[in-house]
Length: 125
Image 1 (spheres, rainbow, N blue to C red):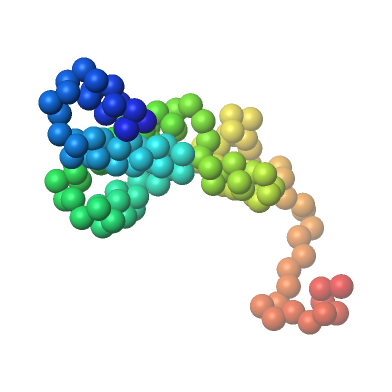
Image 2: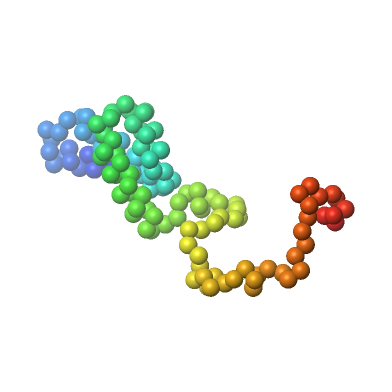
């Protein structure tokens, strides 16, 4: 997206330098990865280390945060979708409304069985 934006700007203003095009492409790549994978600060550090352009830190951080917030508003992250596809239990951030006033006493069994810290096979069976 950053490169597409740069191409549009280059068409409108032909005097723009090639460095601006490369910077915008890098900012677009950072924003796309932040929105898709939900990587935040670590992604910015990796991009800065890869390109060695410290002057892009603040614009990259702003692009990454904007992309992250927009993506968080509209859909789930890549990793959350992968966990759901593999049916791995995932602890969500918020308690569902139907479970807000639920006590553990309602869910738990009255006759709980306990094991020693190192149980034998006979105790487990």
